[in-house]
Image 1: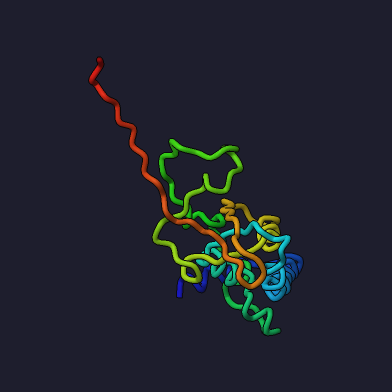
Image 2: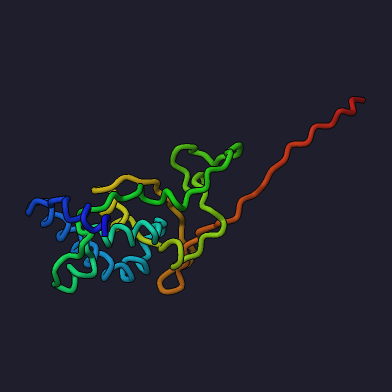
Length: 171
């Protein structure tokens, strides 16, 4: 009850409400055309998007209500979003990195227990660029293998553990 009262105290301008509605409709358009872009042979690099963040965003923009042409929900424009993919990134000590260090996709580690369509979804650059034009976050980029309908994204949740062994025997 108290949370509902706090949410009601937050006023949203018509301009802000229109921007959020526009975001919801734009995402719907991008999502509907995603499968065609996915199977395109030009498209071989994809992004991982946290389902937790996406569901939070859907509440924030009242996605389900807006695309159904209904009145926005109580949370419309009234919650604070986390950074994109903060919940997916594994913070590990990185002693082995791929070159180029700052941009190589395998230098961003995901938590190993993550599952597709449970913890994350695969999106393309168009959808990633759409979200990051409004919100900040960590890009998790992954390449694809195969072509057309046989294309698969190599999420690669496995990490290699390297140990350096020094020998004290000197001959």
